[in-house]
Image 1: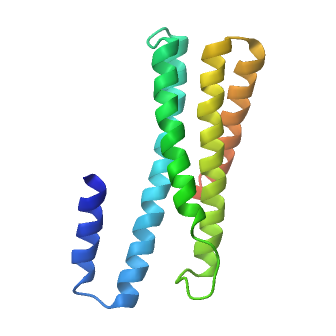
Image 2: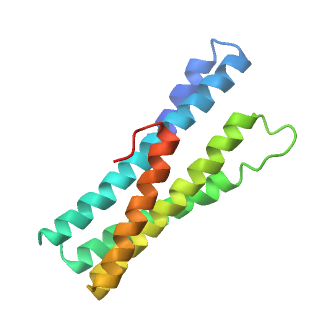
Amino acid sequence: MKKFILIFALLISCSSVSKAQCDTEFREACGNASAMAVYNTYMLIGEVGDAYKRYAYNRDEVTAKMKTQTATLQTLINTFSKCRPTAGNGLNKDDMQYIKELLRCLESLRLTAETLSNYVKDRNDASELAYNLSRLQAWTQISALLGLEEK
């Protein structure tokens, strides 16, 4: 429903401006929404991992939450993967570069969610290290995509 409302609002706002301006505004809106999605997903995965370590979530709760995140991330990966560079797709070189970097972030986040699930299942040093390394890699990619300083 939220997706429908966002799209409807964008379409209404574009009815009073030129198509070129609307296309630009729509691409900017998609860029901003995707940037927010990767940042918030990164934060959510970290918070769930921290909550598990503080015994606020049990293994089954973490596994269920990460299963949802993994599925959602895979949907986004599939959707943005369809934006292939072809003549007439309406995307410029910068748009295509952003999508390429965004896909790397989404893949890293999916891996981070999976490694957190593995960690709570195995509860050993190797799986914890894999989770921490995937989280660091995801942050490096996200901070580069968003133009943030590395943590």
